[in-house]
Image (cartoon, rainbow, N blue to C red; front, side):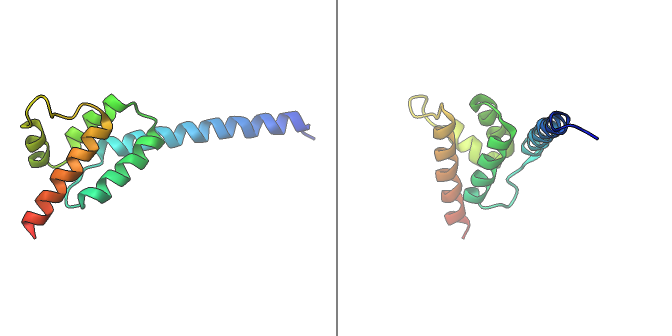
Length: 108
């Protein structure tokens, strides 16, 4: 018969590995998560959720955004004058959303 401490230890270990597994899974998903035909607002929301689950830092999140957003959007943002170019993750998300929605209205 197992005592209460052993049962709690097993639960704690399972929880730790389960959380680690979810984090690793989210990291894998966010690295391959592409915008494709997704509306930009939906993509940003899904990206933010994955970024939180993956526990990635802001610089890596910016890298993944630049890598996984449609290239025409990123090229437009990179063409901004240096003084207005986004630097923080928040600024990148705002710029991507603004440019992406502009493209959407032009395409419609």
